Length: 214
Picture 1 (cartoon, rainbow, N blue to C red):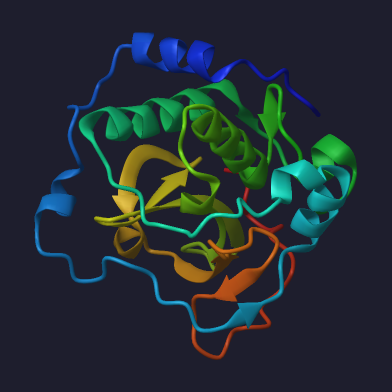
Picture 2 (picture 1 turned 90 degrees about the horizontal axis):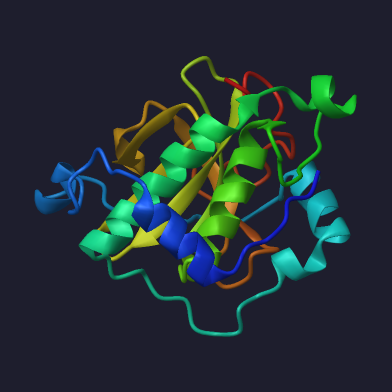
């Protein structure tokens, strides 16, 4: 499913107009000495099959930015926008599996009102890019959840650490605060390339499907 794309200014005005439940500053753990600020990359990994198919259908969404990747310097406004986008999309989209929605186990697409975990993050990534966040700081990430089932989240690489937007919660936490096993994510240098986040798991499964919709 495709959604209409609003202008960056219109999206910015919309999200700044929402009432924020969070303070306009970094999450508390950011201001403390971190144990694991940044996820470690271990080499090449296979991209998810659904991602490869998505890029074939929407190549413009998978193009390298051409610039040198840099970790995002955060501000109170940017933290607030992250929270607003995460909360808005989590509330707007109803969780439905790819099998139920499209009749196949893995299909990545921009959702209109329902979708799987990867559909949530695609929409969040689009909104954030339209708000001025650089694409190379918004990395699609594959994990195993607490039940050891496939799941996908959006990692935001900041100067303060790697933070995660998850369709299962509105709170934004550092990656190491999740009880997930982080397997792989997009390379910040080329969104079509993927890197392993676990040593020895560079060829992890190309599927995300599992208990990923809730």
